[in-house]
Length: 469
Image (cartoon, rainbow, N blue to C red; front, side, top):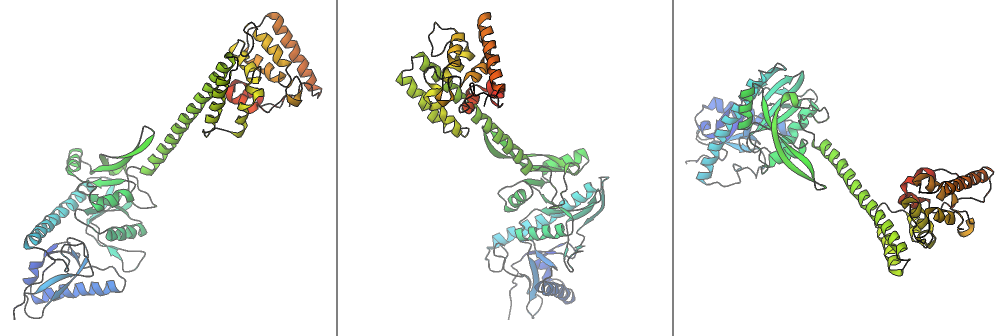
């Protein structure tokens, strides 16, 4: 009875020697060698079932462990078998491939195997040129010092400035589970690991996974990096990084690259994943800048609205306080409530005693602008002040705002004659004496302090005192 070869897996990696093995060569080796290979693969399989990580052969496509199978008759029916399901792998036994697909995969596997070796040689060669690097090796088994029986065989291993560092080259598909397992192993062993790609291809899951795991950093040895290494005489990568940028108040991420040598790489002991650009730190700084910029814009908008309120108040007074300008003024207050800067104390902006005819606002505006506001145009500013000083307010008596207006005179220095100024000075001394004697004649009304600070910020330092309260 004739049996046909069942060689679905066309190319395997021998983890013992690091060589690529074509399935066809299994048909040519003698029985003793094949039996030894088969026993080694099955021993590793048994060890894995016990919880170990020993692997003799790997699929060249999916990097999953393989074991060897055969029929008893002759040597024309030996083949590799996946140890477990690997449905994403085109060589998995449950998948059906055309002869053309099989041929293409064999060729790709051979090409990738040779290229993989070239990259390992390149890394080792240029690392040897670095005075900070020592103890360089390729495919040297690293046994765990923490978990007995665990091991890994990194592509290239060395000491960089005394720190253990390994390089793993990713040219073809590697399962994320394998990447995670290697990361965890090296982190546990306190060994730094750099995953190296030959191209920056975000459409490849492995590249995307690496980018978003390692602070948006990807180490690439593309043609440009290979040339730069040769030109500069120092191992150099094309360092792809995702940069957050603040554009028109929004943050956008863009990918950029630049040459990176080991001298510009950070070696963090929390992840043991070297990086050359800290995306999160940069984005945090940009978020702070964005927040500051938004606050600046919001404050600018708020201040503009406050200035508009003052302009509307002046229009209201100059129109003899008609209803239309009054409604516009009160509507502006309602719009101010939409701002995050609004405070409950600002509702007093709507009170007639504050914004009405001969109210507190009109007197303060007259003093600041050095012209009568809401008073007869024939009045001098001094006459407005004098009237204001003697205007009663609620249950605080007729001098409730005297101290406030005196502070405004001292701050804004409106035009007055020498006689007027002397009268104001005498009045101020009288007020101070009364306050010093704990009298209530000039007790100041403080209910408008917050809106006065808002509209007349120059008076804040005076309002911050307890004088006259």
